[in-house]
Amino acid sequence: MGSFERKVLVLDARFEPVKVVTMEAGFVLMYAGRVSVILESDRVIHGVSRTWKVPWIVRLEGCRPRTKRLNGPRFSRQNIYLRDGFRCQYCNWSGPCSNLTLDHLIPSAKGGKTTWENIVTACKTCNMKKGAKTIEELGIRLQRPPSRPHLHPTALFPLRYGLTTKNSPVVWVPYLDLSVADRAFAVGFDSSPVFIPAFQHGMGIQF
Image (cartoon, rainbow, N blue to C red; front, side, top):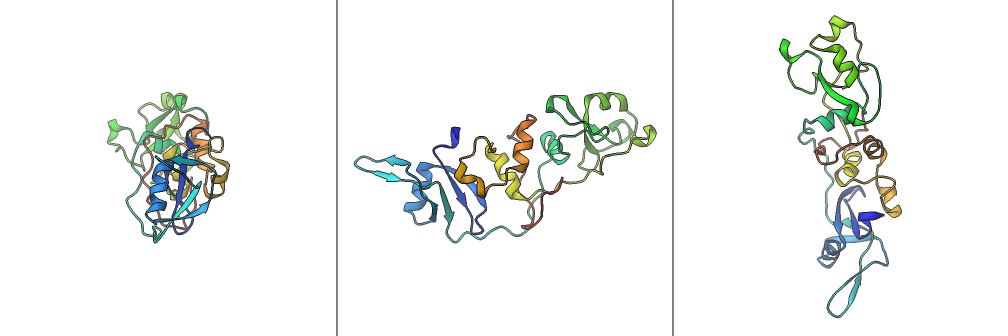
């Protein structure tokens, strides 16, 4: 379990994960009556004269799930890779992030902007071959048209904390969507520039 051995998973009213906190913070939430216990544990924290058990999972009381659309995800290299599934959009190659780059469909020299719709993931070989030309000039067909990504917040949650199938406490797994995180960290994803959870509840993961 690694660094999550002394952590508590916090859920909202829909039993969806919203935060990972320390055992001490989890105890404070319990003491203040802000959470209900979902799964007990034998883990304890020590006070001056007594000890207290702290659960594995708690649920926030009176926490209304987010249903409205918020701001979109931040534009960054890692988030472009994530949107494109860590796959070159020219040749469909997939592999370590160290061999991936970003490329302007319409080159900057020809007025191309740095936007979700004009930037794609490319392997270094394809990027070199394309150079300052457009895909129309080279007859390249994209794997799919680029656009602002749409990911459900539950798929983004593990990325924020670096959670994967290998390091998550087993008792947390039923409450986590680890499909995106497992693939992302396997190819060297940097979890620091995470998405801002920004999409309506009920939208599926779209790659």
